[in-house]
Length: 116
Length: 359
Image (cartoon, rainbow over all chains, first blue to last red):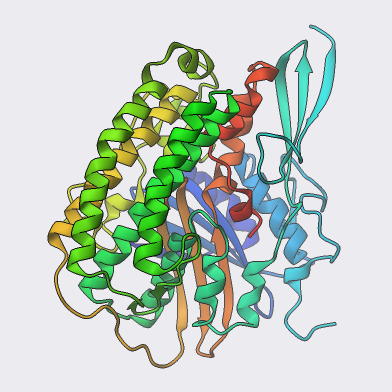
């Protein structure tokens, strides 16, 4: 299996790094959110089976720019993360505004086991 | 510009065994835009890692989908094995590839049947599914299950396959190869089939790349990506080259899957020839601590398992990015400009698995 790189970035640097990867011919593989103390976003890109993960640590109040201007198909990942984790990814090209999933609970993955 | 009409497609539709909804914007009978809506059956299985320990979760991972159940279990186990630096015995790796390729074979046969059913070729549908039964019989004989097998475990596999049964499988698949040629010949050469697939729903190589298409959907448009090329499990020891087409239409997507079925039979034959004697499992002790992005090639394409562990028995996070989820944007592109009557076929040509998507 190819190499896996995790590269920490800040929300303000995200688009700059994404443009670099886009220009280098990388494909967006997935955007993943992990709910630790804060929200940890991983943007995974592939080229020749090498995986680069841009890692952002953020919270539900800080705005993170959408990368859909450069990778238009990121809209599904970004809508999913906003809806399940309560993150604040903004300026998504197709914004479902929390209606992508038909779920009765608001931001279910934003809560830890035992939370109210 | 003709009058625009919005036609709701799904979530319940004869061509869809599972719910997905599309708002189709039409000009006369031509689709100009399609807006998707998913989430009718979102199960939150990823969240269950907080309740089930990492060993128990193997059973949950298998239940993400009833078609790729083995490969979901395998991908999850491989992610945990990478974190825990577990060295899986070689015999277990071969057995995993045999079951994985049998899964691909049965998945593609299921898909061929559904495609034939969608354009009303009932005898072709029945022939495809009749052959699929033979694969399910092999699953039943080797694992005890026809849908959920529960043979993959962290550290190896739970069941071995004897040399006699392996020889029998090889013989069954050799016989099936001949039957498969007859049935797939209809998909490739029949005029009525070609009328519904050739030149329909074209996705260019550039569009496939730009929209992140994976699996047969991408390979039918000339995007070579196939994770088996990375050599995970024992693919690196087998003679394997991704099947690629250039046309990017529904016919090419059918063609790629047909060739992949013959390739799967060949890969299983290679495994049966090369499989060594030895253990099928190593004992795994302790809890995982760390993170890993594991990727494997399912019948529908690349699937990603991201596991993050904290040293306890429960994972912090498991994220599963399924191929159907990745192929939805490419599907929306192929629908643009197609006739309303072709929409069911085009949805089918991505081989959608909503169960996976709504994990």
